[in-house]
Each structure stands twice: as C-alpha cells, then as structure tokens.
Length: 114
Image (cartoon, rainbow, N blue to C red; front, side, top):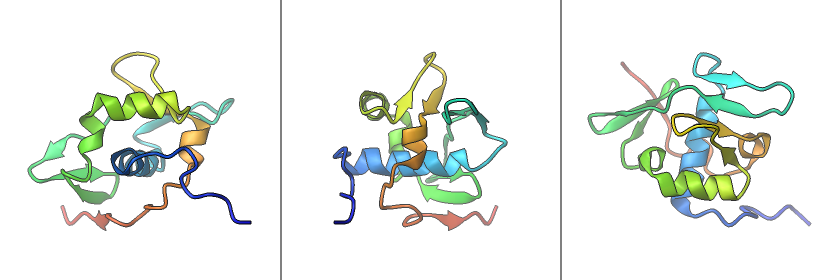
C-alpha cells in the first residue's frame, strides 16, 4: 500500500508555504544546517517585490507566498513538528519538515529573469 499523501492534513496554504520553505533550504547562502539534527534554519524569509517573491532562483506570485508572513501558518507547522522557532525572528524547518512530501513541489515555480 503506498504511503498516504499529506498524512498531517496540512491545508493548501500550509502545504504551499512548506514547499516554498523547502526550496529555500536548498540554497546554502540562505540557511544554516544543524548537522546533528538535520534541522535547517532559514536565515531570511523572502519579502514581496511588487506582485511576486524571489524564492531562491525562482519567482513566485506574492499570493502563492502569502503564508511566509502569516503567523498562523508557522504556528500550525510548529504544532505538527515540521518547524520550530528559537526566537521570533527566525524559522527553522525540522528534518521532518524538510523531508515532508507536500505534493506540490515545483508546481508554481518559474525561474527568475531578473
């Protein structure tokens, strides 16, 4: 039997935000890895730039990335063990958060032209 998709029952906004945060974890210039736990601290959360947001080498619509600035999204991800926050200014994806299959991966990503 295949594994259940979205076993933690994340909503669409939580899934999109987690998928985008996972993209950020692939850029060594924007993260700090805790090699002992596999957790990845996001050193900066992208801010909107007009109608879009730069997430690594990709451009995402500001609407698709609205979860970055929504505290309830991060609270839910923390509650489900996918993220944690050691202080109010940083977000850390746990190893489980980095590995979680959001099912939306590259659905809304296009490479930046600027």
